[in-house]
Length: 338
Image 1 (tube, rainbow, N blue to C red):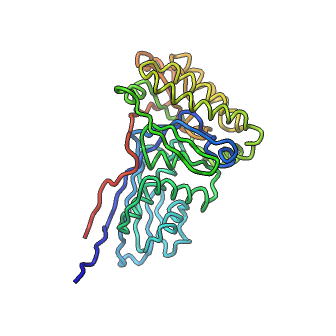
Image 2 (cartoon, rainbow, N blue to C red):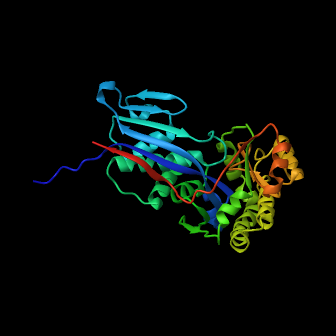
Image 3 (spheres, rainbow, N blue to C red):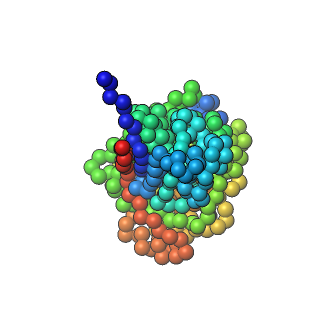
């Protein structure tokens, strides 16, 4: 007599957030379908945690979601968290279900938290159903949820970074295929990169959608700038591979990329952001950028260790968040079986 297959009762995933160094914006479909795109990014040791468990019918609700708010609903269509709703729809997850999520850092901050959440939730839902899933499948399904099902004006880099993890040169082909090339830096190159890195919280949270929508609407007018940014990603890859001990070339490319990026949409930067960045450079930072789409969130800086105290002093109203390199993508943290 065949044994009935048992499925997990609860699954928790841990998915890293990412820093996009150079090339952001060239991963938008409206651009890469015409010119191809490329970015260099790295995941960091800050995470999104997602738990999915089978919910007891005694609660008399099909879905309970706990994030910055709590939802108690009966139908899929009632779920307000749009990413969670469409992930559930895509995977055909059977209720009743309880979903809880937590994050190491604030949302709407430019570190790809929405895509990390999508990847982590999809991974948990597949695992709860007893299904094996690859990093590539997770990335493409997260893209399907965010770009196709929700119609968000975003690119494809965040989903791939979250699913695969590590320091990568990611290319977006005209036919929609994505090629991810891991950058294996010699010696302790990745650790050295982050020893020269500082991340500051500006305190300004923003929705990336409006910025990215304007950026997408202006792609025809800004294509020359985006082509330069795409090529900068290749230069950045080469700079990291050639010289990991001296961060100056990497920082210079980061600075050039930021100055190019801020011309793509009106709200990517502001007089306040420009002043903060100028103070950091005067204090010893070699280069930097606002993380993600721009407009606020986190400020990433390349700073030699001997100048980091000076930069902290120059930015007294901003919280310094210590970050490290995370080589791994989304993974299972725990599985509870019956």
